[in-house]
Image (cartoon, rainbow, N blue to C red; front, side):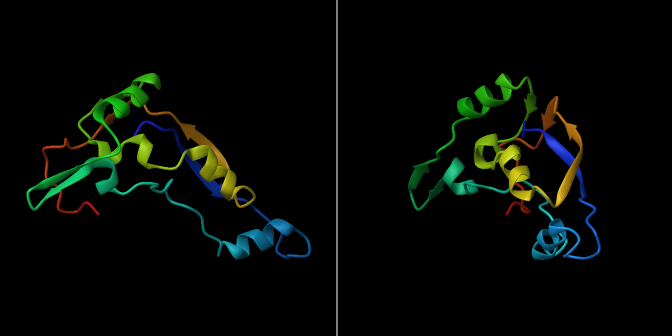
Length: 126
């Protein structure tokens, strides 16, 4: 929510490992790549939890999330702190870890994010 997204393609390496060391990187990665930044915090850690008469406080507040997205100029409608930018790895770090196996073809900067609000129960959330 609010971070850039990229469209990538696999780096075209030579057919032989001897001809191009990038090919061995690709083989180690099983000719695959990431499909997202990945979480650094669980939904429960971000939001907190309720149960058995007690409530734990989450690490992320709505104000923290709003400050981050507002600073990037991204309009957010809906969503909740369990999808805040704070709970995901930063894209530049993910791309740095994938260097040599992918080529960034396009960078997409979000303008608006629309998600179900915190009052909507989603049975498919992980």
